[in-house]
Length: 438
Image (cartoon, rainbow, N blue to C red; front, side, top):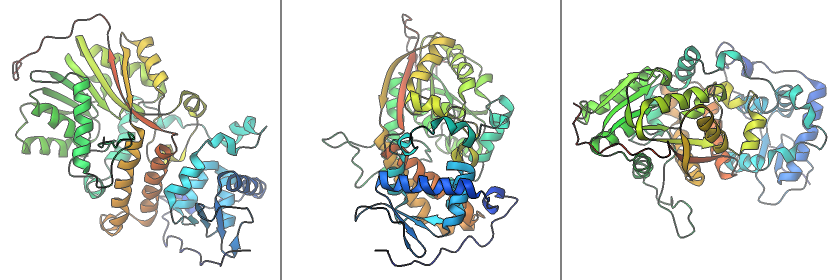
C-alpha cells in the first residue's frame, strides 16, 4: 500500500549561482546515485524512517509514527548524495529537493550510531567519498579572521532575530527536574544564559578585583556579568560587528571602565590575568592549533590562575574519524573548525602547556533545548530574515543548521561541557579589591 502522492515543493525561485554554486548545480552520477538509493533503503529500514515519494512511498516497513523524509525530487536527491555524501544531503535540503514535517526528529533518528548505516566491509571506501578539508579554512591567523567574518559578521540584526535579549550564542543552562533533565516547558532563556555564565565565572573564581581575559567576546554578555562582579575584563574577538555591539552594550551598562573589547587574535593576547574564560570558541581553533590555544591560556595566567572553557564535544573515536573530513557544517556554517573530545583537549593542554584538566561537567540536553528555542524563533521570523536581505536558500541553510545541531545533542552524538584547567600546586592569586588596578 502506498501513501497518497504529494505535490513537489517549489524549488527556490532564484538560486544565485554566484552565491550558492553547488546548490544551483545538480550533479549527475548514475552509478553513485544507485548506491545512494541502496543506502537510503538501508537507513530507512534500520532507523524506522518513512520515505515519501511524489507518487507514493518507498516500500520499506516503518512504524505508524515514524519520522518522515519527504522527497520532492528523488533523482536529484540521490545524485547529490551519490556525488557528495552528507554534503550533498544538506545541499539537497538547501535546494528544496526534500523536506520533513519534523526535521529534528528525522535528523535525530539518522544521527543515532551513524556508522551502523554503512554496510559492513565498505568503511574502507570512506576516503573515496569523503572530501578533505581545504587549506584555506585552516585556523591560521589570517584564515581565522576570514572564517569568523563569514559567520559572525553576517548581521547583528540577524542574530538578534533568534537570540534572546542577552545576545548569547552558546548553550544555556536551565533548571533541572527531578530526573536531572532540563526543565524547559516554560523556559526563561535570558535567566538560563545567566545561569550558564555565572557557573563558568564561578569555576574560574572570578570576583571583585579579578583580572579576566575572555577569548571570544560574542556580543559581550559574559564581559558584562564579570564586570558587574567587580572584575576588570579584557575581551578578544575577531568580529568587527560583535566588537561594535559589545562595546555599545558595555557602555550602556555604565561598565566601560571595567570591560574592554579588543579586535585581537588569541595568539596575540597581551597581559597577565587571574582568570581566562572562553565560551565555545575552541571549536573554531582547529586541531592543528590547539597547542597554540593552550599555550596562550598558560601564558596569560598568573601563578595560581584558572582557565574555564566551555566547549561542544564529541566522543574521541568519532572526533578522530572525522578530523580530516570536510562536512556540510564546515562548508556552509562554521569554516575551519573541529569539535573536540574532552580527551583531546586534556591531552593538548598537558602536552603543550603547564595546564591540566581539573574539572569537567556536561549538560548536552540543555543545548538541545537552547537550539530548539533558537530554531523556533528563527522559523517564526522568516519574513524578517528576508527583509534583512537574506534569500530563501540562506533561510533553508540556517533552518537545516539549527535542526542538525539540535539533533546532534538529542541523539547524544554531541555534548557541551564546562572544563577547568589549572596548574597543580600553585597558590591561587590573592583577592584584590575592585578597581585596585585602575
